[in-house]
Length: 352
Image (cartoon, rainbow, N blue to C red; front, side, top):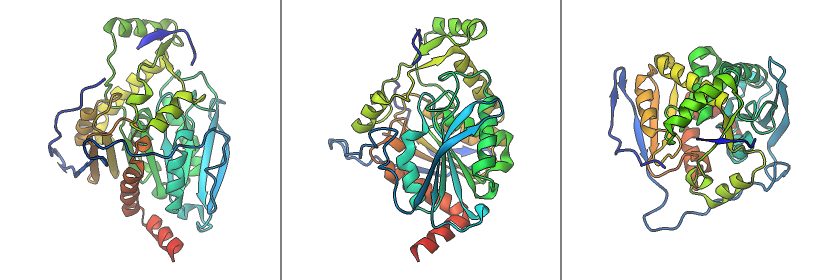
């Protein structure tokens, strides 16, 4: 992390062994890489060329793009995908709320929403405050709890039935989702985490860390550059290029954001046992952003009787932007379907 006036590599973990937590075994599935050694990277389909593109609109899907006002007046940009074959009752509609990572935005997961809507589910994609097209200082946080308050508003509006709601968070969005599940357990049926931020795998100069702590008190909006290039986030060249050219992707964070993130991280570990709902954790093994082994340790500390780890040994940080993202998403969909009976019923009606 280096100072930046603009607004704008880790070693693979040791071989993972089957581990047993205090409360019982954790089912672990080793997800093999889709490539064989020596094969070229599988082709991946480029996303729409611009945020204004309507190429992702398909028959059988209703897409609403709008905004939601947070409690402090911040305007939050939201994409809501709804399948047009849902029953009328809102509480019969399974809903997946996806929370993106730091410095990115919800538009980078439109391809995921398309696929999930095809399963017969609603999908809600918000831009976090200070990200994408939401208001706020870019990648800055006055208080970590503001993200949780924003999720309150979002779920009240778009996911009113907790028993039909799955919260899905990637990276920093995974940390937000963890804290939300720890403090608002009754608001959701299950939790899906994708390479969650439970430990940092980016080298930080100790002097920079000390200076950053001082700046978080004196000038919390001073910025530091993001030193992780797109080529270390995904193995898909098209996704790398898209991120590099995306005008809604930021390339720095503030000192205030970093230490509020650290505050949320400490709380997540201190209250790990509060996670007692169905939990699926998908972790990239070749992750250059977060610590893969931290995710394994955290899962063991949770008290959920229904928890599963899927460890993708060769994959990079952004699992749903990897070349074989469809296979990863299919596994997530199967896990959700087993825990949302209504989701399976909707799929049967659609296929009938």
